[in-house]
Length: 390
Image (cartoon, rainbow, N blue to C red; front, side):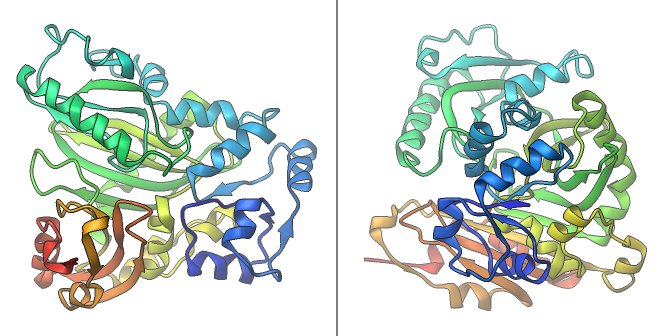
């Protein structure tokens, strides 16, 4: 079964649901987003009964907005507890504390931030919502002098996203302060099969423009990235499986590899792949297999065959977040044609209404080694060249 909700469903996923006759739960949100009555719609009651009759029923979501439905209707399963364990970064850190005994983190209520004494905290550190999405409310604090202005920025962020996401997706009532781990950041699309064994569907290098960059601008996948890290990441995913006992469970997992080669978990996003149908869709555009179908049918990628034709190519997701310094109200339009002209081989463009969310859209690209300057350019761009002000 698949459970969809706002903010977005791609045409590719709708096509996948239709061609594979996948059961799609008929919630009001799903019906509002997808008008095709020919899909294999299943009532909410029947979906719930499926789980009551078969605890091993498969469920894939595309949005964390759907977590509320799971908590309300599937409380008799392990799913709500597993979701909460992964979504709440404080609980997740507690779970792995024995494996990372020297790692510093601390939870703190939002209303206590201004009175919080940071004298004993080692700088620099990261502060972010305990339950969050994208890079909303995430800041690096270099010194005590930055603390007050960071809180001011967090308050502005909270105001700007008010009403955009339910509390199950972004809950700003509690924050986590944690130490910074130097190293490279990666994201993994995977699922844990009916035995709890991990199956990797994609690996992405989260590229930053500098050590102070905390944005989600570029995620890149390639033959070289996957081949070099797949075995190492599979061993780490087995630790997650052993700690949580998850089975029949898809996830989008973010980790950082420190300078000594150790894997440090950042977060696990449960029951979905990358938000806004990004990483789940890119596997098709990049490697020719369907991540949604592979999870629901228990299939594994044949990487040896796939990689025969992918040497020297990067497949990237470019997140067009609004860092122009201008509010949506001040922008007349975003020039998507100009954006596409800056890339050698765009694969797909998804436009987003900038008045509803602080992003202009998402771009999928294929980049050959000799053309990687185009990724550097967009990574460091404030996107002002693509907008026209009112």
